Length: 316
Ligand SMILES: N[C@H](CCC[C@H](N)C(=O)O)C(=O)O
Image 1 (tube, rainbow, N blue to C red):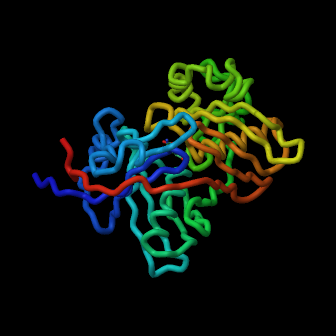
Image 2 (image 1 turned 45 degrees about the vertical axis):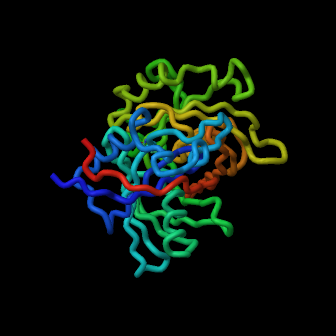
Image 3 (image 1 turned 180 degrees about the horizontal axis):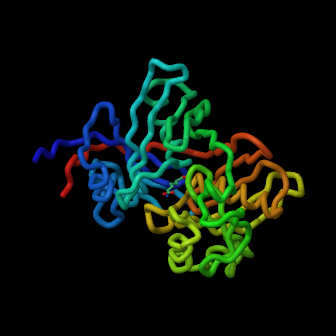
C-alpha cells in the first residue's frame, strides 16, 4: 500500500486547531483514518516534529495551553478561483472520523488559509450547511464568517419532539437546543470564569456526555455551558463565558464557533442578554458574535498559522 507524504498546514482560531489539506492537490484515501491518527492528542502531529520551537507553534491561550499535540480536526479544502469571490469547498473530518456539516472556527481558518494562497480577503465557503461569506481583516490576524440563521425549530436542530426545546431539563442539565450549522445544547450556569464556583467549576467531561447522547437529540449535540458575565444592558455588548464539549471530538475544545453563536442565540431567546451583539469567551480567546432578529449571524475572532509539515497519507 502506498504511504505517500501529504503536505499539511496547521492553524487555529481561538485555540480550536485544525490540520489543513489541499484536497485538490493531495489524495488521502481514508480521510477518517487520517484524521483519527494525526488528530490524536497523545500520539498525533506536533509542530516540534517540523522544527517549530516548543510553545511557539501552538496556542498561547489564557491557560498557556501552547504547542499541543494533535488537532480538533482536519479541513480538506479545494479552492475554486474562477469564481468571484473565490470559493473554497470545505469538509471537516473530526478526530473520531466523522464529518461535521459546519464549523465556525474552522471556516475562519479556511478564510486565512485561502487568503495566504490567493491574496484575496473575501471568500465564499461551501459547507455542508450551505455557502457562507467569509472575510479576512486588513492585517490578516482575524476572520469573520457569516453563520446562517440560528434555528430552534425541532425539525432542524434536530430534537425528537414537536416544540422547540427551550430551557428544559435533559439528562441532568437545563438546556436550550439550537442549530447554528450543527446541533447545540446550551446550559446556563451562574458565575463566570472568575467565580471559583462558576462555569469552570463544572466537570464538563462528566455532565456533557449524557446530554450529547440523549434521545432528545437524534443526531447528538455539542454541549455548551455559558455564564452571563455582562447582560448587555449597559454601554458595551453582552459578555458570556463559554465552555463546549464537542460531538466528534468527544471532549472539551479550547473554543467552538458554532457553539459561541449558539450560546448568544440561546441567551437572546431566553431573555438573558440585551442587544444583538455579544462577546463569547471560550478558554482559547474572545469571539465577537452578532445574532440579529432575522438573517445571518456572524462570528469574528483571531486566527493564526501554527506550522507547516508533511504527514503520512495512510497512517497505520
Ligand atoms: N468546533 C466547530 C464545531 C464543529 C462541530 C462538530 N463538533 C459537530 O457538530 O460534530 C466550530 O468552531 O464551530
